[in-house]
Amino acid sequence: MKSLSRAPRLLVIVALLAAANGAYAATAAGTAITNQATATYLDAQAKPQTATSNTVVTTVQQVASLTLTAGSAKNAAAGTQVAYSHTVTNTGNGADTFNLTSANTGAFSMTGVQFFADANGDGVADNATPLTSTGSMAAGATFKFVAVGTLPAGAAAGATNTITVTTTSAFTGTVKADATDTTTVAAGAQLDITANTVGGPGAGAGAEASAVVTNTTAPGTTSRFTLVLNNSGASPDTFNLQTALDAAMANQTLPSGWTVVWKDAGGSVITNVTVAANSNKQIFADVTIPAGTAEGTTNLFFRAISSTSGVSDIIHNAITVAAITSQVTLTKSQALDATCDGVADTAFSNAPITTGALPGACIRYQITATNSGGAAATNVVIHDTIPANTTYHTTNPLAATLGAVLATLTGGVGSLDTTIGTLAPGASGVMTFGVKINP
Image (tube, rainbow, N blue to C red; front, side):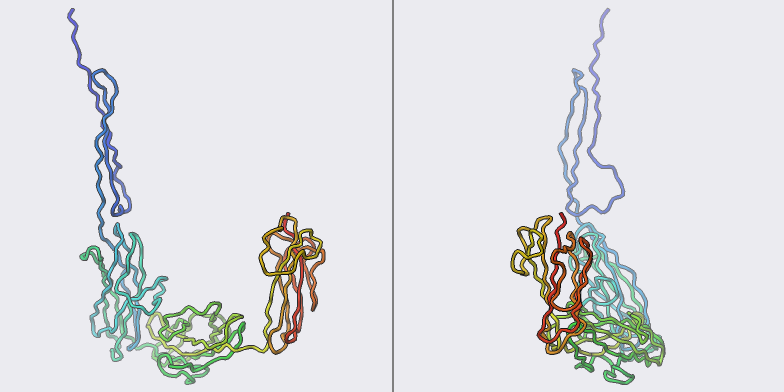
């Protein structure tokens, strides 16, 4: 019987090395998309084989895209300033800069419309530097800013104005977004801040050229300013309270260690105050100056501003830090006590201990309080705390050259006190104690 020959079967399986479609964030511009195919098959001898194609590369191009938060509406009194918050987001796939422009129309024209950075989104400009663009923004980044304009003094109550804020991509000029802010003139509050009493120093609109009240105080003390907020308008309003070092309120960062706490007439801490129409409210600004502050005068500008109407006023005050008649300074030094016999191995120094401080060794501390002023300091107490990773060591324990001492228990942690009481000018009191490094 004649045999029939059979041609070998060619089995081909093609596998494409490509990702399936899915919902992903925009692919970054410049991303290289590579693709390569393989085929597996049996050859004429029925042996498995693999064939690999060349690799093709596609580079993702940049696409501009953005979003801009919607505008808002406010009421504001004629002649006042109003600010509108906005956030632009770069929803494109590459870095882009967005230019900021505005146009305003309506029954009156807003004057001096400008943009300012507002990083924390509180609706208040971070500084006095106007912007015309966001600067370069990475893909996905956001930028917060305010659009600020001034209502004309003669704007009629009930009249409206529309500011159109436009953000335009610098990469693709046809890509832009708009937001509309609407301002209605209100017969609102009229604010004047005066010092101490109604009609007192500081009467009149705006910040004064020189301080109307200057408090003289010493470092390490709190000085109080009494302010009266006078609302002579026909509407009540709520005013946020702010402090700055300049009349433009651009620098609201006080010197290091300085604080201002606002309080109402009852002594409660506040951040804003509501003043009824044709009425007034007394408030206090308590300014704390840290110890060690150098002598000199610092100007302080206190502002009350409505986030609703934009009505505001500023009063110019100042603080003079003067030399004090009594001033206690503290000096701390240390020495190694390697054998924990209660006696310092070396002279006391404020230099770091770099050798010998092994677990189980001791450290001796010495704190000296000196009155370098010209008058007695009273109620003087030296206080210290047992450092972490150590315990109180009682061989040659807490001692002082002046006053009564109070120590923690043996091997304990906590605090140590020496009540010196009165420290005469030029006098010093010394507290000495030891700690053991945890073994």
